[in-house]
Each structure stands twice: as C-alpha cells, then as structure tokens.
Length: 220
Image 1 (cartoon, rainbow, N blue to C red):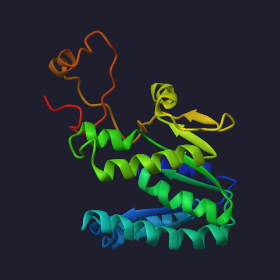
Image 2 (image 1 turned 180 degrees about the vertical axis):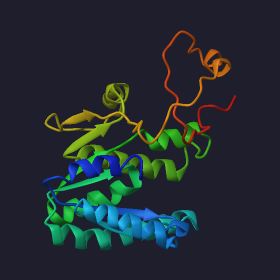
Image 3 (image 1 turned 90 degrees about the vertical axis):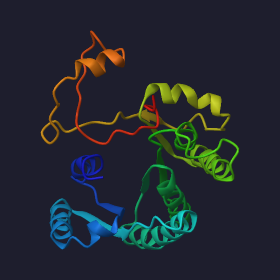
Image 4 (image 1 turned 45 degrees about the horizontal axis):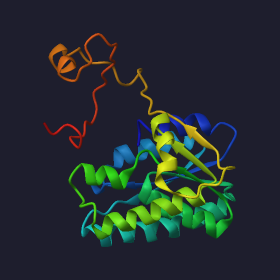
C-alpha cells in the first residue's frame, strides 16, 4: 500500500479531502514508530487515515469480520466527510465500498486490479467449481454492474469484459491505469540475461524492479 496507494493519494489530496481506510497486519500496527510516522505523513497531506487490524484466520470468518468492521468505520468516515466517491482497490474492499456507496448515495469506483477469482483458480488455490469461486464470481458481477466507474490495469483486461456476460451500462466510464513504479524509491536491478532468454525477452528493453513476484504463473 505504501508504494502503490500513497503515491497516488498524496497527489490527489491537493484540493480535495480524502479518507483512507486500510487493513494492517498486527506486526505493523504494533510498530509504534512506523505508525506515528505514517500518521504524521498522511496528516501533513490532509488525509484522514483509519487503520484497522487485518485478520487472516479462520479464513472465511476472518474476512467476514474485516468486512463488517470496515463497513462500520467506513460509514462514519463517509458521513463525516460527506464523501462523493468511494473507491475500492480489489475485490474484498469492493464489498465494503459498494455497501458504503449504497448507504450514502456516493459513487462507487471499482478498481478491479485483475480477475481475482480466476487468478485463484489458475494458481491452484481454488477449484473452478468450488463454492468460494462461485460466490466471488457472483460478487464480481455485482461490482461490474453497480460501478459508477471501472478501472483496469490493462487494455487487454478491458477487451475481455464483454466475454464475462455482465450487463455493464454503456454510460459507465472504463479507465486503464497501469501499475506504476516510483523510480526515485525503487531502482532497476541488474539484468539477468539467462532469465530474459528463458522468458523470450531477448532483444526487448526490460526494466526490472525488485519487489514481490508471485509464482502463480511461474511454476515450471
């Protein structure tokens, strides 16, 4: 969140009030120095920060609790700031955001990031016929059909929308906002020619930035 969310919000905060609701891991919440530094950083930009504890276990019940807790705290923030827009980054936050939008009459922006349910299946975390997959796809439909605006990471993602069979109103704006990297914070690492050849990237210009790499699509 610090590298992919704050960089946007700090720039957007100029001239408009923003409240940020986040779910933090216990180790980070207990780090008083980091928490105080983040509060000061966000406060200096005029951003109201509402950090809640993220729960991981038991899997489904913990997520349900976080959603309920997010709605409770988010409702206060939406009411206090008379929010016009509720933006969610990802599927689980969208459950919170869509609920808040319907409670308040605010616009709902679905920043989908990727086809999360299908990524879970591709990564062998979920079975394609599982109940959790079916439930997630059900809510995915609701997000698409209820959104006042949709954000995709890629144009290829937008091109796949019609194949989903969802009734997205023609008036709903769809924007492509690729994931960006602040090169003042993250420096390109040295080129790995062997890996580039293996991935078929020889002859292409590639910028590699150290970070988290998932193995969902790199299992061989």
